[in-house]
Image 1 (cartoon, rainbow, N blue to C red):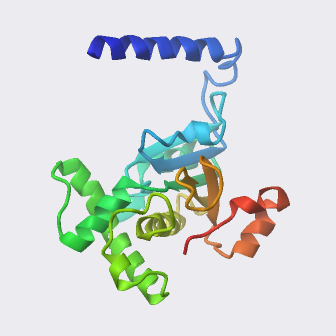
Image 2: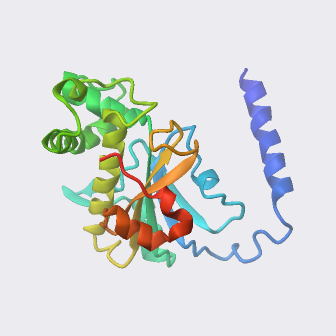
Length: 241
């Protein structure tokens, strides 16, 4: 099994090499200036480069973790995570895309932890999920206050994959919070910060694999966002909140 996977990896790299133009790295070998850094949830079903049809090196600086979290703590202070901050500070990158996704297991685990007090056993996973818990708690309060969910729905941690249930709404809520965290840092102060949800469950009513803009520099009003993207992409602006 292990040998088969190893040879598959090498075969896939052969395909990658064959797909590259002869001059693909001509302007990249001495440094990088990607226009966009994307922080996305680490999930095998969600391809950061694939969702943006990136077919050349140098366009997208990718960062990933469970829960698409942009922050870290250094000496007790909330800062922008290094893999997100680096391109904004050092490579001339001027846009940050925060991308959550429907059916997110990290959000589901944090929601379960809020309701049951139980966390994943693996220490690293536990720490990442714990970082999401305050956001999920606030999100549940916000959803309940807005009458978006009822008491029975609040406790339901399953069954959200195919629609706008609690977990998928909290996915979007988390994206908004991560955008806010980024915008509060000096490192991202001059950048455009966009929030998206990648939908492969049909929760937003469109095709599988579509991204939906839910936030642009803190703006969440749908009409304003549609004006921002224009009529050609107005159907990619939506919200579950």
